[in-house]
Length: 473
Ligand code: NAP
Image 1 (cartoon, rainbow, N blue to C red):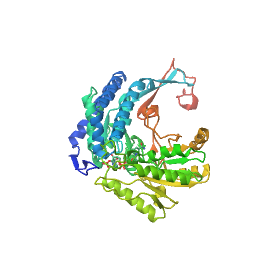
Image 2 (image 1 turned 90 degrees about the vertical axis):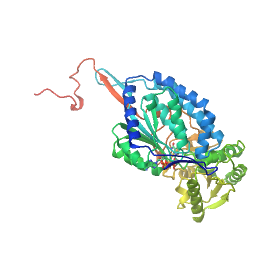
Image 3 (image 1 turned 135 degrees about the vertical axis):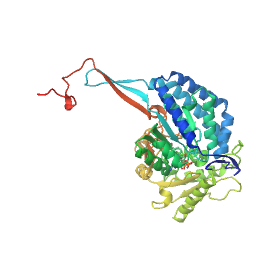
Image 4 (image 1 turned 180 degrees about the horizontal axis):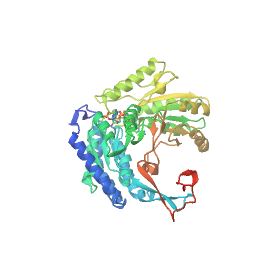
């Protein structure tokens, strides 16, 4: 049985879940397809009311849902509560704005008559989601596509089945049609079968580069539209005119939030040489203040990592980095608690060729680099196969923006944390994937933008390009 909740704080097996049966898969696809056909005939008005209802149910059940998240993957309870609230905000946003954003768009054309683009649902979608934000990741795909009229099948991470089941229950407890979202505990072969099924028209995956490549290969082989939201090695650039106390207060949080397991966590701190020593000292002091413990306890400020496997992988990456010449500035000591804790750690002197230089470290480990110019900071930030997000700090916001616009990633924040909100598009470039979630771009990810040209009368004079049959001579 692959799907299993193991509490990362107690190491206790909480619950195991059997894989989906072929009958369950068939029934889910059939019901989803029938719902797609029904939704094709309806506008988004009823769904808008229903999505607000989902937001309200999430808020009513926030404590219970947050505990389920924390039990599944270990994050601090207050962070889980924040995640559920963010899900409700996303639902409200798409409920409020989708009808407008899905209006037909008239386009200027030299063709005779009126040309417009109408937005139709595409059909049944498969979403494949990771464990690090077990409910928010579902909602990022669910809310816009529910409004578009695309029913969804969910394949969640094997370690967060409790969150998958709880999210599905919210949908089933509301007035939404059951087939709006069906959670199936699929193995990889079953994922391939679902991708290939002719009722499925698209695939949205959030996860690692490795997982993304596998599922994108299946989607490509079956000509299914897909979006890939993959990993990041986000740079946090500190320019030489930055106020050190302001940046220090932000920097440690950007690395330790969610125990460092965020695609857009700042993983590489690239610091101007005049601030480098002070920055390191302050980062160490802030890292040293965190309190590991029970993630349900409000006093705890360092959560365990999601699993033993993840902790072991990070430990191996840190060991390899040090063996390859990195210096350990702080941390990397065992924490005397049974859960999957990793002490916040700072590595310096990482050079090209060190495996850490190009790897995503998915946990509380900060790499800190020293640079002597803005250009050097930009070149270092861009010397990565990944291109998800980033942060630039400067005393001069305009200078910060100029540097930001030269970073080869999908998102950069100047003088602030990276935040994810429904009205901001989310996604990356290079091996961080393609496509965007959230905002209008996310709403349009799986839409049939159908061209309709209505002529005033047949016009035989426009024979441009030989596209219209000419009279025989
Ligand atoms: P992962 O191993 O790729 O897993 C993500 C999802 O893909 C899980 O549901 C997983 O199922 C499934 N999966 C993986 N390989 C598959 C295959 N060959 N066939 C079918 N399904 C497959 O990712 P992870 O390591 O758990 O998640 C962390 C990664 O996600 C990090 O790299 C992080 O940066 C990235 N991430 C990106 C974003 C973004 O928006 N760009 C957001 C969050 C996280 P199983 O669990 O059953 O293996």
